[in-house]
Image (tube, rainbow, N blue to C red; front, side, top):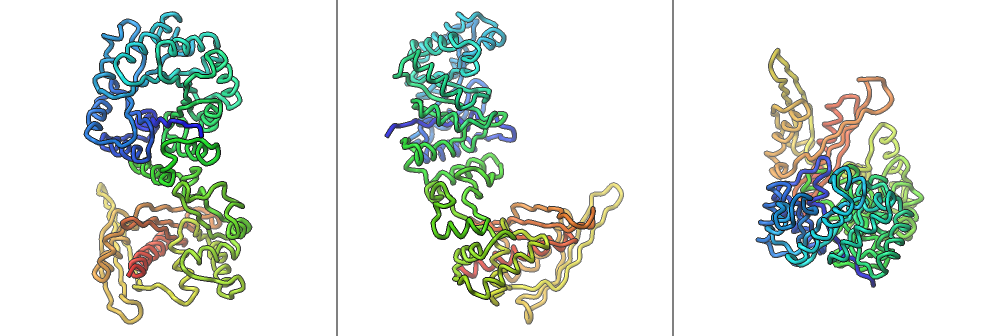
Length: 528
């Protein structure tokens, strides 16, 4: 099996993405996670660009990385200085890492307009920079910035820059599609020409951006043509439209193209790593990410589900377990009985295809969805519904009434107060009457319900609301429309979604909140 090295630039190129801002602690934790995943090289940042990156290189030495090697990033030295006197080079060497990656200009327009030097001077910069750094560190990787655009503009000069880097001793020449505009067929044509000019034994890698949404495809094509190093980021984060997504590249290389890499043996952790990096970046995890997204192996159409139940390969390109993901069957108005059978099986309930109960469940779900409910993300509400239709309702309390007051005085902040009356347990239990303030009516209602229930069920304190969404539904005009409220709750390592629908946003919220508390109590009871 041919081996490919994985070079991760999440902490440098990835951190340049809009809305991404890793703290020093975040960077350390991400690096440790990438090492656990057996990434070969972790680019920690540009030591000369900011104090945080410099501090990262200092602190990461306190940790015993088991596999990955840390790389520092920089550019060729300043044209008016020498390698020995350039501040960038001093800082690159000061952090004392085994790998240094520097970029140089491949495109004549950048040499003339950005650096404002001659083409020959740029070749000297590339050569002298690599020779000097090679005498100081274990390995030097050369990023040929804008290589593919440079090749299209002036093939001979772009090739000349690579030849200089190779002659100077660069351990790997990284061909960069910096603007992300190159298409896969162009990648093939240009790399074929590069190998013809520099030799079939050329050691090279690929660094692709995703502006044409071809970064993954371009990276795979480069590997197919002999690239032994792939640079990218977790989840494809990066400037503009992002970098090549390692969470797609790695499983494609390993599972479909027959290549080997160090993290192949840790592939079952891929989904975990993907979610972890976004958690550190304080970003929600996109459900439709290939391989690792929550929807990557989700099935909704009845025909699909029926086939998947017989043979998963009918509608799944790989076994989700291989990348640490799970198969999900969604329930909606498009669902057939196969969907319900699958979901019930997940809950430990066996339903026969000709069961009257199965028909009843399908009919009720379709009726509710016609009213605006959606259970695709609100699987906790779905589970509670199925138990209720089976005649086994999960009820731990009864909301007898609620009242919410909003008060807004001139030049004062608005205040909301909710009053609730609950009975625990339902029917014959003790009645609790309480009130609470909140930041808005929904928060006040949430606080009042919690306050009432926590006396009976202290474990309610463990759960928290992670997300709250309101969607106006089509039908009635304007503010008289129905709304659907979705609530995502979590407790320790478990998350669940609940839903409510009404023309009254408080009533819809109340439905979703009650399901959320009920499901928490149901989970705790099931554990016992």
